[in-house]
Image (cartoon, rainbow, N blue to C red; front, side):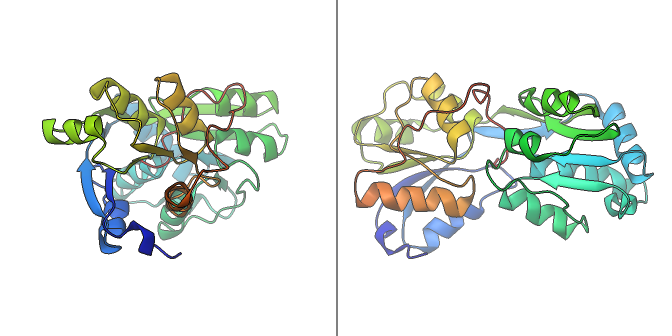
Length: 276
């Protein structure tokens, strides 16, 4: 991917304490990057239940695990390691389905073999659409802001779904006064919206954003959350990945985007937290 068009562009990039890869990649391409921690990732509010679920998975008590966030599988891995076991112990009998390049990569690093990756929508709805019918048990480790799409959809296909809160998305510090002023006066060229939570926090903390600032959403669900918060989207990436959002950013900088303001499907209003 040719990122030369980004040289000298001032970009606002959401980060967390654990994730600065996108900001670093853009800075390496010559962009002027303003890092903002709109959200932070906190531990589950039900640690005992999460630990019980992790140990049950490692013991082979589940037929499937549906993972929609790297934060979830990393939280599970920490528990497994602390208890002297591994998430990969349940395989090859147990199967894993996941979405998004970041989550797939983390699963692979932890030794988990992925059986199902949706070919169409890279989100919970995509998993439901392509998941087989059955009567076994599915573990769904989710964030506190996840929609009920996964649980309800798999249950309709006959599965017993155990949802457990694996992590929480909480408010970060947000932009400082200088960044808020740059957004208001249009000094920033574009903002990358990497999740619905980021979009909602941006709208809440910066009520006045210049129309000259382009807002780029990482997928339809994030775009839906942004619109719901009153934001206008310049481009929506075709794939919910860092490469996807960069492609959307480049397209928007080069000219009018053909992917702007795509209409989400009903039920997609709550964004999955894949890219936090």
